Image: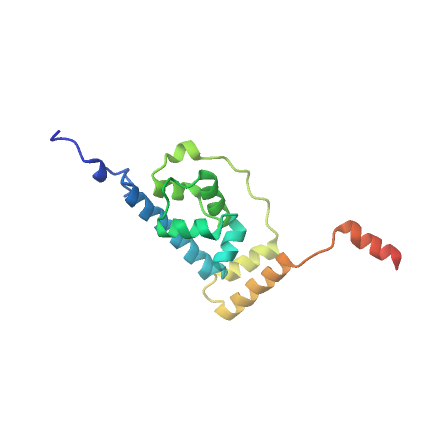
Amino acid sequence: MAGTVPQTQRSYGHEVTETTSARKIAFATFVRRALDEARATRAWSGTEVSRRTGVSRQTINRWVRGDWASDPEAERVVAFCEGLGLDPTVAFAALGWDRTASRRTSPPPPPMDPDVEALLRRLVDPAVSDAEKFHIRETIRYLAYRPTLPLGVRKRGEAAS
């Protein structure tokens, strides 16, 4: 067959070929960049990424190494992307999957508090020092994960005094 292109050279139009190794490299690159971005912009460790995405560190490490025998589960890829605020279709493209079949419609995000918007703008403002950005992140992290008592427990405590 003189006119056919060998399967290992066929492209999907987004520089990802059909070969498993090329797909693994493309997906590993995507995951590595996502992790680097989470570390740089949010100061998240691998453990924090795992906690926020619901994907185990072992799975993420296998993805980074391209060490998987069968394709990653779509649900895990979506969870990883959503936990990092990324579009899953980019990951699907790296995997060579049909992006139109996997698309879901998601509800619009809830309106954001103006104070939170102001903090987010400061975090991406190049004029704000790294030290101030660090303090903003640490304060947000503290507030987000501090333990709170359920409303009913607080009321019982107030009634006893």
